[in-house]
Amino acid sequence: MKIALVDSGIGLLAAAAAVRRARPDADLVLSSDPGSMPWGPRETEDITAHALACAKAARAHEPDALIVACNTASVHALAALRAELEPELPVIGTVPAIKPAAESGGPVAVWATPATTGSPYQQRLIADFGRGAQFTEVPCHGLADAVETAREHAVDVAVGAAAALTPRGVRAVVLGCTHYELVGARIRAAVTESGGPEPVLFRSADAVAAQALRRIGARPDPGAAPTGGLTVLLGGRAARLPAAAATYAEGRLLSGATSATPAR
Image 1 (spheres, rainbow, N blue to C red):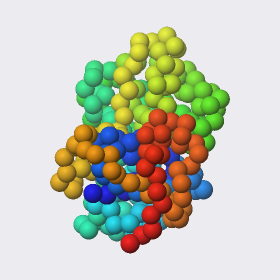
Image 2 (cartoon, rainbow, N blue to C red):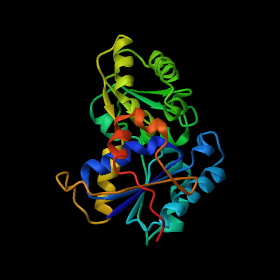
Image 3 (cartoon, rainbow, N blue to C red):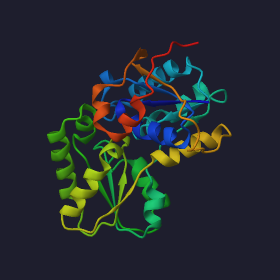
Image 4 (spheres, rainbow, N blue to C red):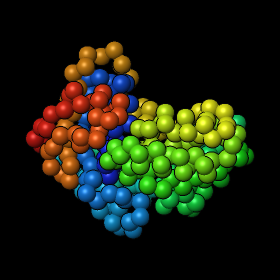
């Protein structure tokens, strides 16, 4: 079994680690293009071109499914990726966990990139799945870039700024960018320190991993032998995990299995 994941950068670590925890025997292919970050401010055609390039590089390794582990790419490029790759290769997108957060009763804050905050896509999700809960959209300036490069001070500054925009009393925070999942504990602490109760964080990684397994007819088996390998592609070329990945628990979970295997 082999699962591929696509993102602009190391935001895909969260979903990759979720797959690894669910199926330690699954091979993983991580295909990203950090040189093109960030994708958010780019035009749809440009985002689609970068996402397709990463997906095609991963496809050469013959995965059974491909996860688009990026909210921006899922918004702008998912239809094009499916048109190009399916039905031969199932493609699973990433959607912010608006619905389960609303079911918690709210009030809810949605932390997202400035390009996504207030976008018709995100507002449509809130309208369709918000179930009448009170939502606040919070733009997180510079947070994805800070996480990507593991600049601790920059992460603290970006998280603190977003926490200051988050209303007191928020009981749930939706992490609307896959990079944010890597610093979830810091986000929870910052929101709590701003004067509110400790919020529940709603992430996408576990749901996306579960959906990928369903699409290929596989069941979670966390007790399976940890035999899964890891292939890393940066800009389409075999590489090692970026050094910044080791800053995060998800990267450390994956790093022991790293191997740059050639396409078959």
